[in-house]
View (tube, protein in one colour):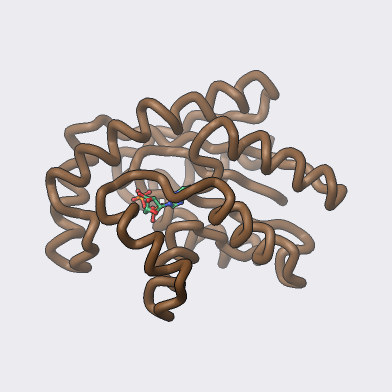
Length: 187
Ligand code: ADP
């Protein structure tokens, strides 16, 4: 099963991805995590990406696509994956489609996790206290939400046109959201 998780920063994509990994035995591929890994490893790519990420802007499509391609073609992703944080704009959605075609693969589901902006801001503020991510400051979060609205929200439309989107109410407990996702995947 090949799933794309869509939703604003703080909508719970990472949390839900963890459950999907256990339940369906497919890897979680998060471009945010891949980028943070490159930063931690202090690669040249990581250093360049950090500056962009700390402002809440999108890292260049080429860099992210390169990382994604490397990850998606690994053995453990052969039977499926959960994509989180990619595609983040229409160009990336088209790149993903081309890449999957090349690999003779197709997406099964795009899950759009919906949480209102006020709640998202509140959740990220809480996460900032616990995790201390450098892009979780109030100003940067505001920019990330704008970037989401302008560049990432159209990706949901792109998949709606392909009839693979299910909207998932992202509020309630983590288990509530998990159940809604499982129900959506049964179709
Ligand atoms: P969140 O969903 O909470 O914003 P992520 O971990 O998915 O967090 O992303 C953090 C940052 O990493 C983004 O603000 C962006 O700078 C960069 N990033 C992640 N994925 C992509 C992508 N597909 N394209 C460009 N930049 C990305």
